[in-house]
Image (cartoon, rainbow, N blue to C red; front, side, top):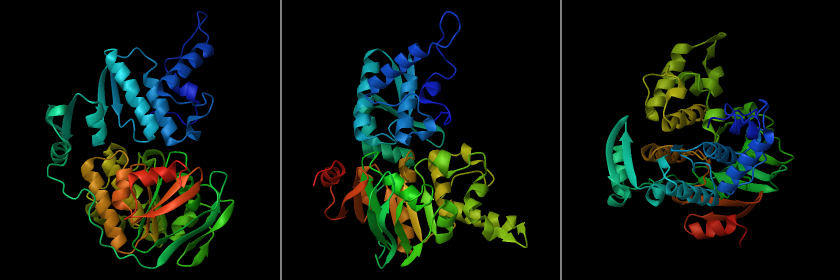
Length: 407
């Protein structure tokens, strides 16, 4: 997203295209009126005076979308616009897109979500490895054909079978509370993937940020292998063996101007210090092995992370945390904004880690994904866990019922 975190929503919306009156003075009233109208079109309410950095990822996404409506549009390019949106926000966006089409605006819509492609597009172009593979009218193709052309082969068993044995409890959270959530208690077993579902704003990400020491807990206990931990910052979490793939990989998960090697070794730098010096040869071998294991597509380990595709960036973040040999791994929206092939590779990697006994906590707003990957699902509603569902009983309907406050 192209936003400035220290500027307000209003300042971000009109940066470089400020409205001025006849005296050359900023016309704040006119800008506020235009911004309010743009958000009304999207059906959202966002404080224009709030700094962008204090908004959720979903709200930041809505600001980016609103920004595109402030000019006289002829062509609108949208790159994964729904990646951080709720279902209601997504439907509202589709309604706005339909209105723009009716006005004659041409829209280029980039998405890896098949249901969106078939819902709103007239024709579809598939690209792979920098080449156009095919262009077809949407009504003349299907999901299987598109996926096959996207990855160059047929994908069977989209969610790979998990063979990990679920054993003893490794991670426990007891009565965790902050201003954003209350009395959160759950446990994760060796080899288990515990999914966290819920609507945006339910508190899922906030719980994980507190566990990792980014935000401070008001009360509660965190245990690994029965031992209570004191975690006041991410350094203590990493030392305890907790890895955390955040929902915003570009701002929080990676240093885009650093190389693949520098990013992967960041949390484990001390392991490569010998006699006060950084052992670059050992670090390079370590990174090469991880990159090959995760199938990171790059020229070499010195390539800047910012130049990689979204899927390969996500693999670098995963490699970073696998490199610390985590006792528990937290994944917040691990497949957001990555292509179909990379998604399946990430699912397979999660299964491999689970088979090695690593407990995994996964937040996902993609219901089919969480139903397909998780062994058990914790559903949050308004800062509390509304209930737990095991894999056999979980359906989209009963997950959504709990997520919206139903019983």
